[in-house]
Length: 273
Ligand code: DGL
Image (spheres, rainbow, N blue to C red):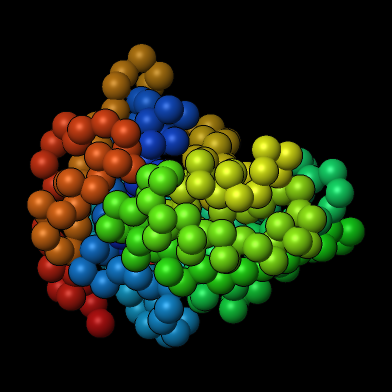
């Protein structure tokens, strides 16, 4: 039994979709969430910059006595997971491997689509992992750079012509490719599930990054004897690097409930360069 919290981080609010899954899958665990809202989005930046930011994010989280970290960000996972794992003793779970495992399991026609940020697509990490898991799978990737800013601004509702138009344009080539499974390779995208489903049609299975990694984390904690007692209710603390007011307003959309505790603002630049 281990009562220490789990650190969860993302470039912004997207990782809250993973928090929401963790509340369901591991309700007894304490969580420390960090959203780097001052520097979101990461997805259009170089690998060097993303790694620098991710190291600072991890250093901030390490200021708590944690038992594990969930990197609830596709962009950080695809560009920096291996480096961060090599630099830290703490168990770290990313979103790519668990998501690809699920997609490889559910696809029937072996045609899998994957949408994510430009940095994630450029890294080739989802493609490489899927091919390793099932060499017969053909992967169709598409970078969707406009989606994160739109989601961060709450433009997620069906009927919103701006988000519907952007999503339809991004997804058209994947629809034409006849994929039967679509990986939402960025943790912001589950907020767009309804709109994405409308475009792709009901026969296409959507696999979301945050959800699968929460299951992976549960397995890892169990394996290493790190789980908290199941008869308790965990607490979550939220930290951001920019205005808490903006975070709290949009966070309720991601979490589908009000925050029980106010978020706190930290100066992320204090955590290394
Ligand atoms: N949620 C992040 C991801 O999963 C967002 C990326 C960004 O900041 O551009 O990739």
